[in-house]
Image (cartoon, rainbow, N blue to C red):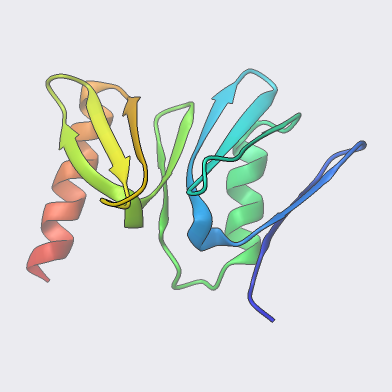
Length: 121
């Protein structure tokens, strides 16, 4: 069986394949998971809790999810464009969806540098 990310609250359970998660945003005690098929799940879980659950459920060498600042986790497989000065990032599969998200200039600069460094290894 394929591995799934599982998030439970007192009222619900969400079971999703990690490769389908594009990004997760936080708003206080709520987090919204945006999927590649356009589906969104809003959970009454803080982003830190979701980040810890992802780390627990995925293999230790699976680093596809990156926390960016206080309110955003992205799936690195969908990063298509980063422009730190404009505080803009585009997440896309380059076929069926495109999401534009914002993050701090410093966070995007650090992410850009990390991805550039990984490409040279």
